[in-house]
Image (cartoon, rainbow, N blue to C red; front, side, top):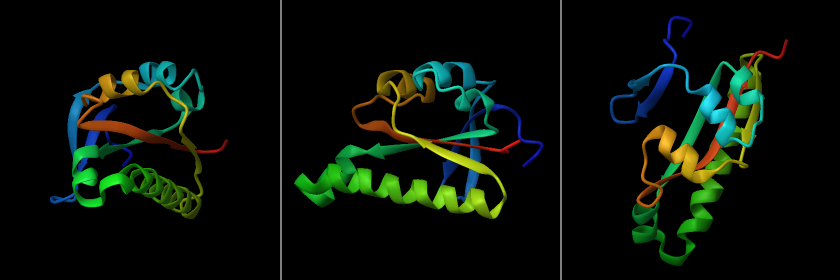
Length: 124
């Protein structure tokens, strides 16, 4: 998607489409929230996965948190596989300030919270 404008996007599962949430380059803020990991600013795209905690707890009870993080890991691995297939580099990120990432993407950190990030780009 070479013509995709910089911004924050949400993937709408039911419509299988991207929805623009906020225009502009948030990579400097995400880099700070990601403990200064420069790959966040240098990558072509940052993926951020969130969890709807109550939804998981309703279904899985005390195992909800375990499943949330296992699912995030599985999705991260799929991002690595997709990146390799496209001859791109990928690095998933678990070290970030939760509250800062939540604020950047506009989730409350209670009902929905960021759990994992992934940086994707060319390996020049």
